[in-house]
Each structure stands twice: as structure tokens, then as C-alpha cells.
Length: 237
Image (cartoon, rainbow, N blue to C red; front, side, top):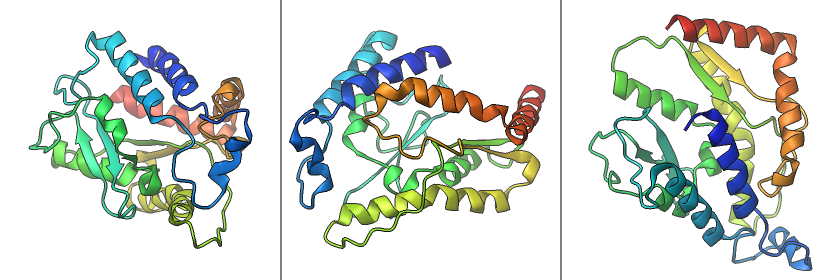
């Protein structure tokens, strides 16, 4: 899949999977209350949406994730018992993985590693070192989903809120560590500064707003300069 089909498929998936199951009713507010046992979105809808996309582009809903012919790709997941633990890594490349026979759609049954690894740059950098051994790293690109405001949560009854609090600050903390680890000319972090912090998974209807702010971001002088530097490195490689 090239970029255009990826974007189209993502929009299609978000519309189906991230529409709250209780939308337009008072139950839509239940995720804000302590003790709600189920998720706000339908896991079945997400699974079916992914299966349809996989079938459309591979001809088989049960296509395996492992594929040594594609660009090396890693998907991160965590366990609900310890969101701070190292993530489970699903890999397209074969390095003796216990999950080499897992189907693409089966991965969505795990917990999103965003609850602790919303910025996976460090993990990906480590994986690249394993694959490419001692080859020098010329360029690392990290693409964020927008700066978030600092969130303070005091309700200790909900363990999920503590996980969300960690997730809110984790991305920028990783960015700061990586920026110290790599030379400035080899590390690029692109992250829309304003207007995306309040966008949630269920805001797929605001795709035009998201696209507009994202399109405006590269026009900032310092961003345009970084994009040109990054492109120069990639084309030379």
C-alpha cells in the first residue's frame, strides 16, 4: 500500500471502529464515570474493519503479519497487568519471534502500546540496531500526533487514569531523551504544535480539521527548514 490508500483505509476504519457504541445517548458519558466495565468503542467493529481492509489488499482476511518481503515493521502491544512493562513486539521480519504465525487482525486484540509507549522511537531505534547491526544511523524520523496539555489526575480509584496520565507525558519525554542521544542533523521530530490536542479517536468526522492543521504545520519556517534537511538526507541515501 502506498500513502494514499493507507490514508483512505484509515479514514474508512476510523469511521466504522471509532464511533462510540452509545453515541447520541446519555450512555456516551459513561466512560467519564468510575467503574465503567466496557470500552467506549466496539471491538467487533474494529476487527471487522481491519479484516475488510486486509482482504481488499491481500485477498485473504487471515493474512499473516510476518512478511520478510516488506519494509521491516514492528507493532507494539502491552499487557493490562503492567502497562509500564516492556512492550510485546510483533514483527514482520523473522528473528525467532514467538508470534511469527499471528494474523494481522489478531494483533488488535491486544492492548494498544500507546498506554506507555505512545512514542516508540527508542524501541524502534533498538530494533533497527538489531536488524542492521553496526551500520551508522543517518536519519531517524519521529512523527507525533500533536502536543498535549499537561494533565493532572487526582481520582485514585481508576487505575486506567494513571495509565492515561503516563501516556500524556511519555511522548515528549522520549523525544527529549532521543534528542540527546542522536546528533541534531540525524534526528527529526515532526509534531503539530497547536489545535490537535483535543482530538480523540471518535473525532473522525473532523478529518478536514485534522488535515488543515497538519497541512499548515510544515509551513512554519523552522519546520520547513527541518523538512528540507530531512528530505536531503533521505534522497542522498
